[in-house]
Length: 416
Image (cartoon, rainbow, N blue to C red; front, side, top):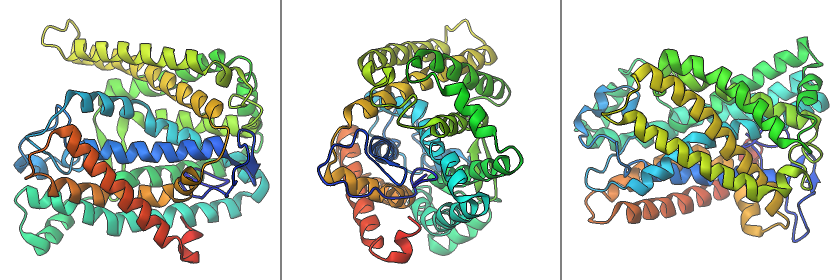
């Protein structure tokens, strides 16, 4: 998440109008800083659209009885569904959280080397642990209350009673924060017991500048090895929920692969390896974008075939084959997005600088705005895309403005 250690946890310095393709300041990389802001915008747009895509349940009453499902889709609009939004959500879900873990790993090893293990972990607890507690205790209950009302809830007192009766504590998008903290803790332990680990990872990715296709192939194979066995056992939709700690079961080691890949690329050097502005990944961004589109379309075709009533595949076989397809598609989209940002971000922009400053705060608080705005639009006769745009616009302005306002306090700015 953020600054010199992870993404989503620091702001960008003001670079004025200077070229930024090679600009760094205390570890800051403008292309990566703008990328993480873009990913947060995708998260906001994704959650703004989940009430309106094909496949969500149209009856609200059973939602409270399905522990994880209603928390993934807290508001459901039974009268506004869009196939286009389904495609958008499928595209996002394939890659954006994985890429967030990759970006989060980029500055981990340099930060460990520079600060040492204890200061690094102290910083991570401050900048991830405290925001996670805030999101779990304040943001999540506020975000899920509209869903409770839509499911026939019994007011605030009934909500508190039912919430405490879940047996766990839903945290919404904050699951990413605690899992990232867990990965950082693991990285800190590795740094103590195997200080050469970062160098070993960097050796695996050192040819990324001139041979990104080789690195891509290695990356996808590692992702497949991590994901396919898990999805074969647990399926693609299962979640683990222990108290306030949730994660998507099949993707746990897949996310770890992306985080480790980020550590390797960062340990070798962001500006001189895979993400070098003059490297082959950046120079051939058009080819990577075309490959991404072809692979994504093929993955959609496979998904439609797999869920068809005439599909020759058993559910188990479909999960395994879908696991290979997911890992390949996730890698293709991630590499294409990285290529686009490294190649095309050449100058700073005040709006993007502000977004980079505030993206962590926006990620923390946006979910409560999403659910309340979606509930407010339920009774209004608008199309699903219009509603999504309206919700997203409101969420963007409210979360951005709230984050910017709260960060005026130095104590909060030091954390988010």
